[in-house]
Image (tube, rainbow, N blue to C red):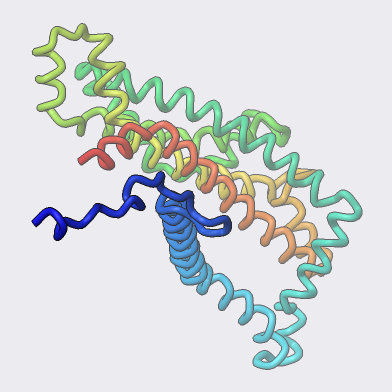
Length: 304
């Protein structure tokens, strides 16, 4: 019986051999798979973003293509004089840039626009918060505000010119007037449309009036306030260009009207193109500021 017993192989007690050089273990393979997955996810996200950007830019690219090809192939020669193709406008813009003319006009317009817009922003937000917070002040000032709100800013341009002259004061004042009411009205609307449940919950936690205003009402009203700020930014540029067309010696509005009267049509369109790019840049800047001051909304939405 004992002779039939077999001895266990001695190889089982030998120490495990290390993996051969050049062959990766399970941990290396997992890291490689994770890296590949991350790269594929990044490429997928980049492709989606690029496709979305192409779709968003399709309208602008189509318009620019029509501007370039339309006057050459679709319009008559007489029309082409008053509507030059895009490459002629860009060439005129390049000449104005090399001469330093476009920079000077742009700087003059930006100085006036920023000054008037800043004054309107401070006054509109401050007065809007006071009117929305104190009901009696709203009752007293609301009829007067409605009267001036429905009076177009350009209709008062002769009044500002007569009272303040044709210098910088009249142009900055007309810009401030045009930008004031969008900021004011949206500030009032933003404070008044705060969710009452948030206010009750904050009061139940024992917050003072100042803390309630600072931590609940003002953050909730920020998106609506920034809607008015964006509207005011657009209005400040448009009204300023119109004001510079009357009695100015510098600025994009002066460049446009002076080029038109001198029959420098490509220069005129170069000025118009600069105004469009300026308005687009201002809008992007205000949108970025709105996202910065409304980060708490993104955080709440991401956590839900």
